Amino acid sequence: MKWRSLQEAGENTDLRPLREILAERQEAITKYVPVETQAIHAQAIAALKEKNIAANILSAGAKIPDFALEDQDGKLVPSGELLAKGKLVLHFFRGRWCPFCVAQLEAMNLVVAALAECGAALAAISPQTVKQSYFMRDQHHFRFPLLSDPGNGVARQFGLTYRVPDEQKSIYQRSFVNLPLVNGDDSWELPIPAAYIVGRDGVVLYASANEDYSARPEPQAILEFLSASN
Image (cartoon, rainbow, N blue to C red):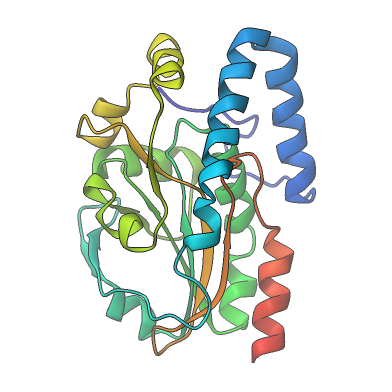
């Protein structure tokens, strides 16, 4: 189970703005996914927005919790090790099965060198297992660590977690999105997608999250923030 990009055979080089790529994937869903299924997804997003999760996440000025998570190769990566290199761009994503997550991380993969020029490293966190992260890195040729967050322990400290509602859970099960297998637990919990820029001292400089998983910040906006803050 995986999202297959058009560039699956090689490294992604789609240089369009991320919003155009996301819009294209949303258009495909609108065209091919049954209206009833789309309505259930829309209801799930609306329910999350009503809870206003994004307004209560760990925000600018707060210090991130210390953590140590395994990367796609099973290596334990402490947050202090990431921050020792300078600023840290941290993405929380749902998993390799999500086309919007894949699009975002592929777009970020194209700016890894530009991030380094701004003195920043990149890492991404999801609840998927190390094995799933290994498959994802291998498939998409990511040049940054994919960190596995068992049980969404770190995402919960950032205020990002929610439980997939039963109607949406049924859809995922029918479409072979087997979260208990992918995530290694039966909680059916996910993080809302979020992007952070963290200073070397562990203090959040920038935070962006959205209950709508089809909406993601542009890599260029992150680069511009980093350039302005240097």
